[in-house]
Length: 270
Image 1 (spheres, one colour):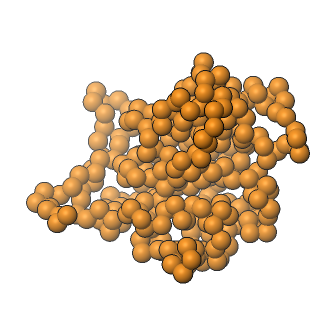
Image 2 (cartoon, one colour):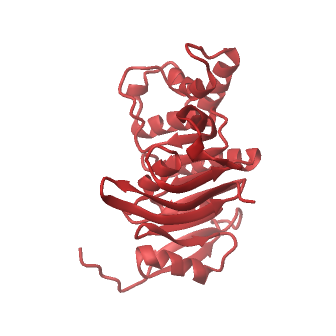
């Protein structure tokens, strides 16, 4: 039985339908990426899955249909990281991370000492140790994204949903973020679903990849299992002619990585 199942999901804005009958499932312990062209509906898909956007169809997490839950109950199960945090007031980094416990606190409840320790540990994990008392507004965009990741990690949710979490991070930090999230998901037996811009990051960091095109899921593959020619065929629907190869880091140590190259002689009209 799948850990998380989406069936016939349809959603849009007003009279404009963006998603049509999207169906897919995630297994426990999986990190899954969604790849799509700009404006193809990645954010719409994630917002619908989290219950932020009204939708048709159903989303079932660990045997519970999410449409039957309150906003608070959903927040206890799903940790969502949007492209922008929406925080516009002066607030310490530690207080931002402590927001992750709100769904577990009663009315007017305050985080206890254990929650504060967990928040401090999460801040250190994402690389912001020593900055817990700094104003969130003074952080760079990448550091803010790491702070929101720490806030999500402390929730103890079983499903993490992230909308282009790598967009503001440099090469080193985006790989650190994906490694941290993957370790958490694999150890805890939850799952993660994220929209990514970078296909090579998805190929080398995720267990599964979904292709979203024309409002429907048109591809579903595993980079560590499926043959290169099959993966190429899926990716070409988004990126045009390309070649995939496996490359080992210089020195011959470490795991092989996917490298994606555009094929020669390709000239697109802009």
